[in-house]
Image (cartoon, rainbow, N blue to C red; front, side, top):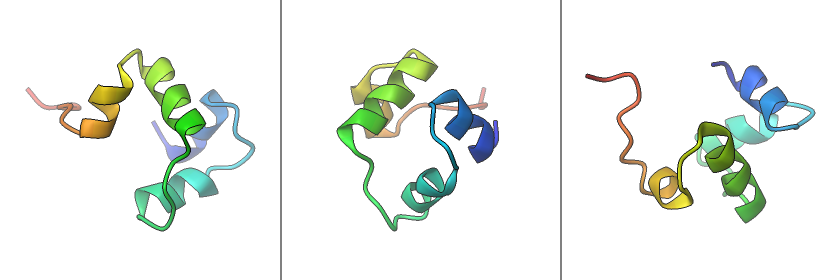
Length: 57
């Protein structure tokens, strides 16, 4: 999934905000964290701990 696709899925108008979070330039808002967790059907704890193994087996 691209940043543009994720932004669209989360109802954002552009992907720049996500890019800045990814680069460490901005901190995500609580609302953003909730949207991402709901979209991926995970808890906010799982998301914030950053321990998910994505695409690894």
